[in-house]
Length: 387
Ligand code: PMP
Ligand code: GLN
Image (tube, rainbow, N blue to C red; front, side, top):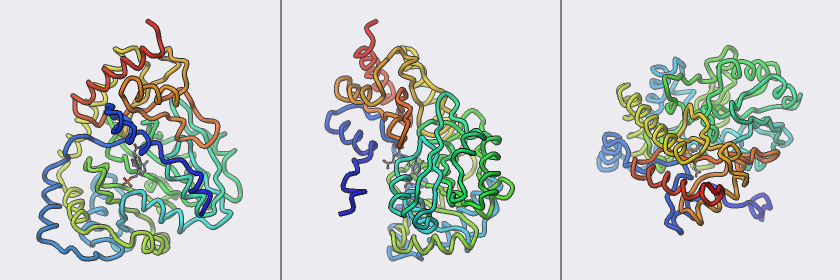
């Protein structure tokens, strides 16, 4: 057996959701909405299941979805992609990450990761034989700075993996941070996997900046997206990766031996959804911004210090600033077991030198769930603070 996996714990998302199910806790841990999702997109999948093909679609994805991805990014992000040579459909962003990492990392290559990092990145890099190097982001602003990059880049840096908007910190990298990064990437002739699955979940009028749009980055960026996040249908596992033809050709070869292809009906429905009018995307953002504000207000009233959330399905609480001296893992354990609310300790997103005073909560929930979560969070605070 491979010790990498034999000794690996189960991911925090699965572990917390399993505990929530077992204990009947309100689940504000793993990031998934508890509403049904957009009817029109679900109906498009039903129609495709009944009337479309149920056989293997092409390995790179159905032309209809690949075209829709290219059109969507042209319309929403001013990124120009050739659907036929630059877009590959995958089984979720997770598979896109795996294919891109396996295709681009040679054993011994250094891979720069920004902590906090999404849980799949490091195991995939290690499985590919990559040597991780970490840059550490910290609250409250989770910014990239020049000194951090100078320390993290070396002559052996081959790949950088970045997530923007960032899960779990709910922050967006500003143009200056991205420019600093792009400058180093170009100087080191490196490639970036840019995990932009949260691209449509940006609030308060903010704009997502696709890394590909920065000068010099168009042909050295692999942009990854996910229908699960765009349509609030996280179980669908339809994703895609976009990259210049020489990168796409190699990454597609890794994809062909991971899942080869992705259910055609869900691809057809994702294509339908990506072409929906702007109203859908605006309403979706407004809806989640309201949910964010509802959870934030309730937590503030309960005595928590809430960190800003500029995007994603998440916001975080700052434990020390909330008068809680326990670390995030202790808090999350007690909160789920004694107060009946599942959350995610942010230290799980660090491989070293973890931030230990921050806990992530998911607000992509119906009002009743949010209110029940707030009530349980009040109880949780009472376990740690006596007034
Ligand atoms: N990357 C990030 C940053 C995520 O937050 C997630 C899921 N929440 C994924 C990748 C995985 O996306 P998918 O479900 O499409 O595989
Ligand atoms: N991305 C989701 C989260 O951050 C979890 C996805 C998963 O469980 N693999 O909560």
